[in-house]
Image (tube, rainbow, N blue to C red; front, side, top):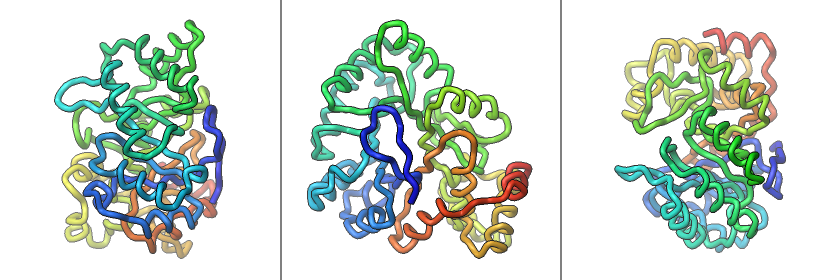
Length: 316
């Protein structure tokens, strides 16, 4: 595994992040072996959220059982809308304190606001985040599914008022172009040729990207095979179909399948390798339900695609 350092986080972060939005954790089932396998494979960073069912509780129970809080990096998110905007001081404090209890920890390494609200009181939000940061209760903080323009707006305010700014972001990013908002309510993607300028902004501002749905919600994980589209399409849920099923992505998948076959690697490995070789500093979040696949996906950090392979994938 490879690791990177980012501002305000005192541990190195694994290049691949374990996504805790898998069905078992959402439903409150114990996944001790799965989480053990992730850590054994060198994946020390775990992404969850206040609105991911029982995910936070399951991660917290595992951390308490294994007594490994000092070894893991926790990413969690709050202020998700439940039928109405919740990017406000009251919801932020409520969600943060709830996450501490669920995760059985007194600090969170990376905290993000989960969906934007353009009319939010940025001053109040930044001051609360800075209070928790100054107290050592959160490390880095930022946003999930916020546009780069809004992050820039927040950071201009922070700079002008001697506050710690947003230093992390979690948009959709991967080889699959997001053609529609999977869930509705303001999902943000930086994938595809149309977002080249956005990725350049991230690169220039040195803001790391924690990429959700990096494998097109399963489309680029090996679940779908271009030689058998009719039947393997059934492996995709309605959100994946809405967000990623299009001819452009099918052609790009075929290209990745070809490279994977030539390399003797899996489609997921090649897709992850592509993400990690982009100029933007990206940490792919991978939700895995099978412990046997964890080590295989983690090995993607050791795959270096050629310039010709990278270009072929992008041009499809």
